Image (cartoon, rainbow over the protein chains, first blue to last red):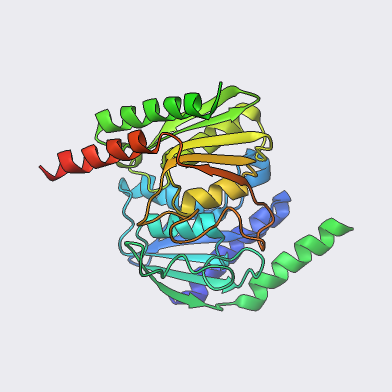
Length: 149
Length: 149
C-alpha cells in the first residue's frame, strides 16, 4: 500500500463530508500500514469548531491505541491542515504528514505558517505534499461552487 | 466581575490539573459575564493529545451553546496557548483572549507565532496578556520542579 492508496481512503472520507453538506476534507491515520482512524469534517452537524477531519482522526487514534503519543503514525489528509490541526499533529507526535492540495487561505504547513517543522517546538515531522492534489482540490471547488448556487 | 476574577477561576482549574499530575493549565470561557465552560488539561489521564484546557473548554462551550461560532465569548487561560489551541480559538470565532503567563517554548500568540491576529486568516481577536501572570507561571514552575524530584 502506498501514499496514493491511503490518500484514496482520505478522499473517500472527504466525499462523505461532501454528501453531508460539510466542507469536504477527509483524513486517515495509519500505523504499521494499518488504518487506525478515519474521519471527515463534522463541524456543522456536530456544532463543534474543533471537529475538523484531522482532530477527529487524532482523537479517535488516541482512543484506539490508548496513548496520546502517536509515534509511528502517518496522517493522510486531503487538504493542507489549518493552524489548529497542524498544532494537533505536532502535539500528538505524529511522525509523518501526507496531504493533497494546499490551502492558501489558512494552511499552516506551507501557506501561512509552518507549524509542523519549527525548530523551536519539541517535535517536527516529515511532510509529503501534493499526493492526488487535483482530486482533493476539485472536491473542494465543486463543493463551494455548488453552495454558491 | 473583571479579568482578574475570571483568571482566578482559570487558576482554580489549573490547580485541579496540578493535583491530578497534569501540566497545570486551566481555562474558562465566558459569554455575557456567565461562565459557559471551565476546563483543565487532561492529556495524560484521558490519553488524548488534544485534551488541552482550551480545546476542552471550547468543545464544552460549543456543546452548551449548540453552536460552533462562539461569537461574544472571552476565553481566559492561565498560559499562552500553543498552536493547536490558538488555532482552535480562531476557528471557534472567540472575540477575546485573556491569558496569564507567556510560553516561550510553544506559545502561538506572542512567542513563536501569532496565530490569533494574522491578517490572512478570516478571524482575529483582541488579546490581553499578563493577567495574574506570576500566579500562573509559579504554578507551572512548582509543577515541573516537583516532577523533577
